[in-house]
Image (cartoon, rainbow, N blue to C red; front, side, top):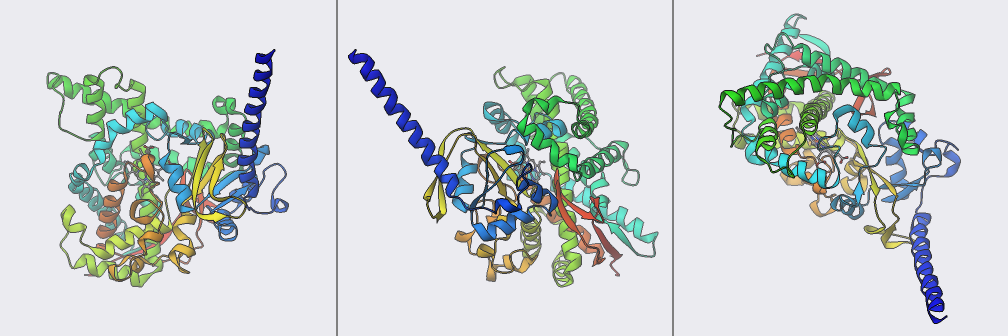
Length: 529
Ligand code: HEM
């Protein structure tokens, strides 16, 4: 009898604790401010407005009104989604990458497009892949890529020169497509430095690999601007079993992977043949991606070994993420230079004061080039937002206390967060009233931004994310951008065409002109000697 009584008391206490925790944590979400339900669609919540506007535009507008942590209503009756830009909260979410994982709506498209490589993996699988691949991106490894990147940038420069010579020295150019389609820039850099594979034998004749990938990617980007691209992830979030359904959008995502996978298999076969020719001796010291992956296949203990599929998927992953992000960032920065001739001239003067092909170390001394690259990455992050799902109840610290919540926010398991990098990177409370404007001079040593006020992340911007799952390729990205910009402003003058450019999220940040995705027109003129 006593034991039954004790059991009842114990159960009641346990229930009270559970209910208190539930009340406390759900109360925290309830206390969050957010946009009025009157502007939300009954079925699509506030997410429809986000899709209808430019990339992160609505999130930025709401953040200015509701602060660093607010909620929006989710589509298809999904529980409220929290938009986080509070610096301490975001730092915490990224620091605990085992608790806050990529959301289920986010992972199926990643799997469809680039496979189950490092970007897609979670948990121990991710840890193993990251530990294995990180050595390919240390300062030492990236420094060794400098000469190859110069070669690719110079091939890009000569293709553009040839084009302009055919058009009396100047022409309107879709600068994104030009860079993005150019095997000399996109695929050759990642191919040569990472995969020991040349995607183009001759600069003047882009390889069919590169062209095919570009065309399929462009199709994918334009599909991503359609209504179905809004719908598909929301349906998958609500009904995860739809992941494998033959939706047109998921099938078109798979097309890119199929092409790059074919190339990946070719690369592996060729590298194996080379290995056999060396009588099985592995390239012990080489730290490029393919050498690391193949060495792992032969030398690692079974527990550390990646499967053949994981090796192929990582080749696909690096081929795609390694160039789409950089092509977009380079194109948006060149477009900003076209719109801001004073910054363009200052950059050109700095670059022309130095010889071509500077060493890695000397390149770092170009202060204005560094400022231009940072500013392009700040204002136009290639990946403008990310999502995380809480796998457990947790408490998040806040930089700015919220009325009714205080300075610690109780998260419930299952909570979805959206973290808009663009919003954080341009917040006027951090960057001043010119926050959204491209102004590289803000990075110069006489007026650098106030470091403690900046978010966590490379150089105080969130473009490369933060914490253990930050961008593994950021050093390579920054070096490539510096070399591309320095090489192009040396030979060309860029002018604004006056076209109205919108920005949308379709895989990565995409310029849209007259409804056409992947379009960023700039007038380019040969620099007169
Ligand atoms: C301007 C260029 C780039 C930008 C803005 C960028 C941005 C990012 C961001 C925001 C993430 C985190 C995504 C998330 O968790 O939601 C990320 C992850 C990643 N990036 Fe980059 N990236 C760039 C270039 C590169 C390059 C050049 C490579 C490699 C060649 C690369 C490889 C990766 C990989 C593998 C991950 C996943 C890392 C992990 O989860 O451990 N990225 N990148």
